[in-house]
Amino acid sequence: MPSRAAPSPSARADGFHPLFICAWLLCAVFYFLQYALRSAPGVMLPELRSAWALGALGLSSLLGLYYYTYAGFSIIAGAALDRYGARLSIPAGIALLAIGAALFGVGSVGAAQAGRLLQGAGAAFAFVGAVYLATRGFPARLLATTVGATQMFGMLGGAGGQFIVSPLIHGAISWPHFWLAAGAVTAVLAVVTLLATPAEPAQAAASRGTLGQMFAPYKIVLSNPQSYLCGFCAGLLFLPTTIGDMIWGVAMLQDGYGATHADAVNRAAMVPLGWVVGAPLLGYLADRLGRRKPVLIASAVAMLALAAAILFLPVGLMPAYLGGLLFGFASGAAMIPYSIIKEVNPDGIKGSATGAMNFLVFSLSAVAAPVAGWVLGHDAAGAALDLQDFRHWGGWGLAGIALAIVLALFLKETGSAVRLPAAAAAVPA
Image (cartoon, rainbow, N blue to C red; front, top):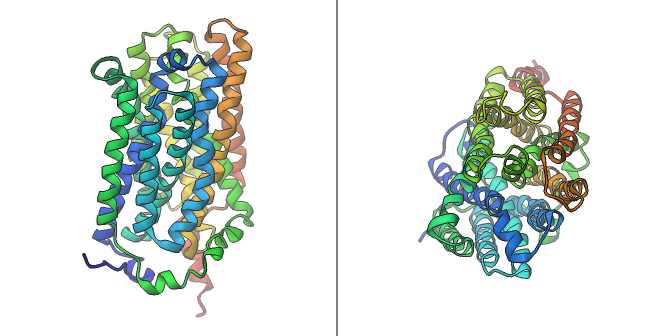
């Protein structure tokens, strides 16, 4: 099959490019699947606890292994995309996710640990790859909108990993068979993506230098203080979803609020479903206003208020499904720093900028997962977890959101309302 060369950067800056849009859609499916597999263990904690004789700290640490390799391989994914392009890099990531899913279904703790590490390593290529393809398939003026739309696919997977997987493993199939089947489906996607993704032009690949130079763009990204502000601001806003909802959300609703398992699963799924709507709409609003910071800060303030209401209002005062849905909607603003980091760094290193962003964001999740398990286990002191345990742990999440708001105040405004007039003023008359 002949290789399809990508258009030059100048050719793709202001138009739509169907081949890259199709490849972006396949990568969005990859992002959907990795989010589903990221959140799926949250609905099978009793089964995993029984199979492996693990407590809160052990389970949280095992499931949190995902974020260690997700963070680390985000650096590799960004560098690989900038040097080799999407056609080789993204299918390689999908293949790693497929192997990791199958290993998790083998049934032993050792295989589950290896599988979780491989899942995180492969998943790191999903969002970084999708944004890389989006910048080639869509006009630059739609950057925040396409980043939000990409996250929409991921959070659909996050919701599906809860309300679709739960009835499956408690009815049609066992939890190990679910993971084996997920590995097979993901492997098929790797082959389809390899065949469908356009190739980079030869001269673009040659211009990226030697293998040893592929990480050089990170020197630029990570020497920029704005990159750290973007990463830690978004990372703190992600924690209530990645750790709070996707690992401990179902347990909190069951053990803390007395919900049935089915009701707890459906209520926890409202948070990623809120992201599905909030991420693209808030991204569109930031593009429409031409300003990133007001949308980001206002949404983070809403997150703080909603999280406090969910945790501390008397049980039953807030409608069961509404709080999670609204909180997820406001959380979608965590994607706005992904646009900012690309705009505060040079155009030629967009893959590395996104890779660095994911590294910073999910390093926080990697650290927070075992800490959350330790805090909950310490508070419970060997007894069953109760509402007070979850409220104490949730207070740390509120502090994290408040810190994210403070960091956002120091971000550089990069929206078109500021950027375009500045660029016009820099052009000699």
